[in-house]
Length: 189
Image (cartoon, rainbow, N blue to C red; front, side):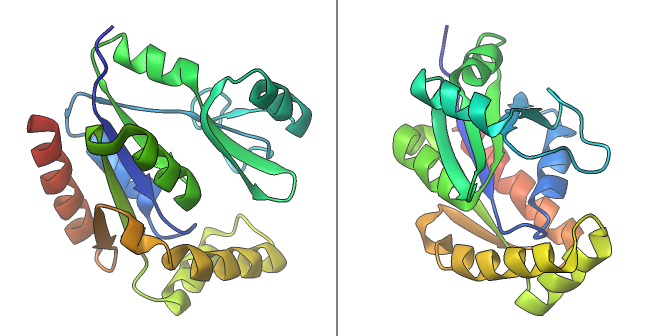
């Protein structure tokens, strides 16, 4: 099986990375979305095996012990996110490149692991105030969860310079166009 390239998108929650990733997937770039595993409950219309592989914390820990992850992170106490090795095998066996939508530390870890075979992109919110507005507008989290996400976002933004590219998502269409241009160039090199 030939190993394809890896494109990594990371950002604080609410920055628009998932919207940009979905845009890229619609553009016929020979990429496939890597479904992450997590130990949280589904939100909204999320589906197991489509949006995430939803595991219990115990199941997640067992898979860590079995060395089944390419990368994983305990993002919040008892809340794990990670990439199963079987996801890369599944996507590369089809001749596709892997597209990741992962937390910031996961993105940094993947870039370290795959080096020049990976393009890491940090989606930056225009401001913390705008980020708070977006998270409130989602109406998927309680106010205390939003404040926890904002505090985490402030920390995550400090890691932006460890990514190959920073895209400020102020105007979504511009951010999507910029992402497409950079990703398309990387995949064709």
